Length: 260
Ligand SMILES: Nc1ncnc2c1ncn2[C@@H]1O[C@H](COP(=O)(O)OP(=O)(O)OP(=O)(O)O)[C@@H](O)[C@H]1O
Ligand SMILES: [Mg+2]
Image 1 (cartoon, rainbow, N blue to C red):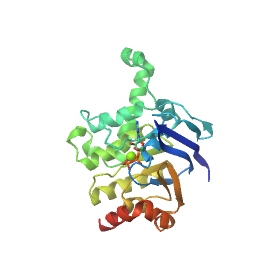
Image 2 (image 1 turned 90 degrees about the vertical axis):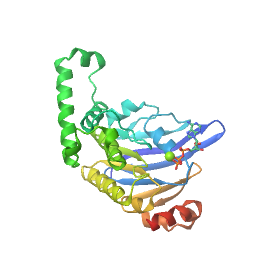
Image 3 (image 1 turned 45 degrees about the horizontal axis):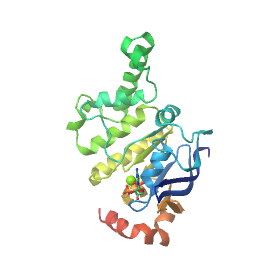
Image 4 (image 1 turned 30 degrees about the vertical axis):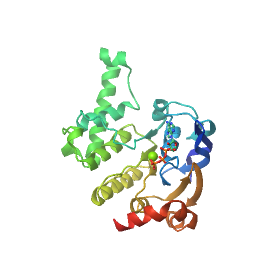
């Protein structure tokens, strides 16, 4: 298997708090990897670090064979590393189609001046973006919602739209922070199926969530973080049966998930 993302010794402090502590992990091409752990374990901070939103105090991040530590988000996006946000991050006043088209700009924006002047290059890029967005909406069965404003969509579809925006940038790896938080069981299954289809395209996925039924039905491999440190790693079956994981985290979360 080819390694796509390789994180070594990642550390991030906020004042006296070590939110991420000497964390190392890797994600292979075409893999779906889950990151789980209690509230405040540093999971979102890991995503913020890997996606270039914040910088690490120590450690290295390699993506597709290149050292990308300290690179800003837009440069990582153009390399194929794209994230979604824990809260729904859609352009609320725009239609579903416009949201998907905006996602394509993450990878190929012609520049403000070229866009303003409408140069042939800018027009060609817009056309390619429109076509890619239309193809994505059709592929995910969202065509019928293309002209609906994002803020009029049910919450579940808003979450899916966040994934569409990420996909529109033609990523090789997407990082999903709590894609099913607040969703019903049915909506959760829909998002899970969407992510499984994303992988069919050869795209790797790193996903954070507290819903263990969702994580179990989705991930090839999990790792668990507690107080910024990795405490376990393995297949979902191995990790979810690990006494240390149950004690640090799962006791409560697992019981809740099993009831759903
Ligand atoms: N920008 C920041 N400034 C100061 N402290 C921060 C900042 N971001 C995160 N933290 C702290 O770092 C720790 C890890 O936070 P993080 O949001 O990464 O946890 P999490 O595992 O995503 O939690 P949750 O499951 O609740 O989403 C927390 O103690 C949090 O308060
Ligand atoms: Mg978080």
